[in-house]
Length: 99
Image (cartoon, rainbow, N blue to C red; front, side, top):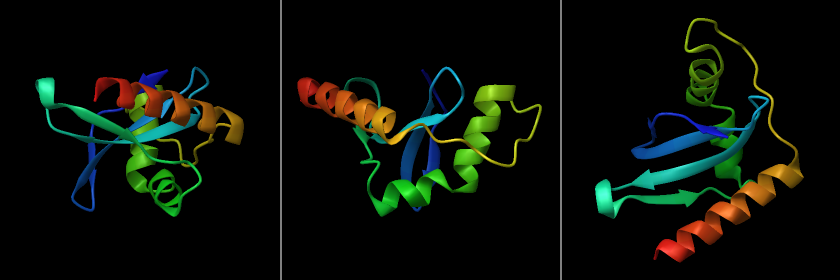
């Protein structure tokens, strides 16, 4: 799995993550830095996830991740609901362990 750079959307920072087939498999809100860094996964069943996953920033993150920005893909594949939920649950578990 690979993670994008931070993208600021509506005043908040987000990472997009992709599986080995370059399908979007997660989005996390990020805040802080260093020892204060927090990554909070966005639930894939919410409208926020839907909004973020269809944003121009998500497509840019895919193009940078998959093609290093050299090619512009105009559509993005999203992982299955099962993979999205598994990734979300794992990130949520990891976030709780850090708190």
